[in-house]
Image (cartoon, rainbow, N blue to C red; front, side, top):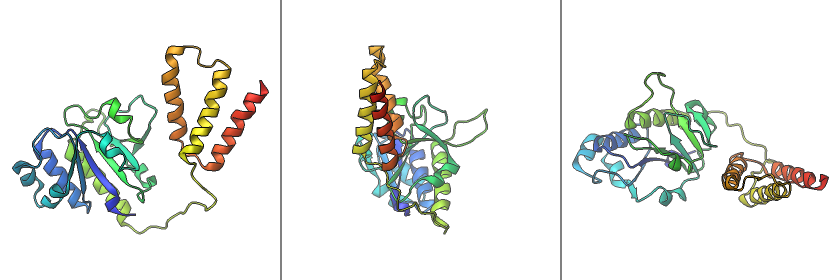
Length: 237
């Protein structure tokens, strides 16, 4: 597991001071990758560099993107930070759950703009939403403070030698192709029983169904079992 696999992504940051403080926090805990999406201030600028206090190298290596989609293909696991739980079919996790994240893959932590945070649309691109526990009467954290808390926590995870519990060699994650085949089989039989009676709701129901299957982290064996179940249900009719 390497800290080089971790990228901190600031989505439309508004204040130079916060960008600089984020760069400083990244370097404080041994990370090196900062990405910005459509920053409001000119990047880089003197205020950002001054606020970074010794993390000028992080600023110089940072990459700027026009939109979120341009960085998606470079990230295996994308985690959004949010002070509120969203009514979306996305796994909500806390700091302690980061221990379960596979940091051998490329992991991105996505932070929203200071004034509004991430929109529901931006959240849909992510695998998880991460909530930092705070006082219930004052939940909003400063952008750089939120980043520093997360950076410190995952630095602690990656820096300590622990006994690694390896997955059984018999376990093999299902491929996208296997999940797609299983999902299509399920949808086929749902169509046959006229499950989608309200046509106007069918697209969002299909979207939610696919979200369920793709985020379950199924094994190839589990996918085969579910495919057999769906096929058997079809025969029973």
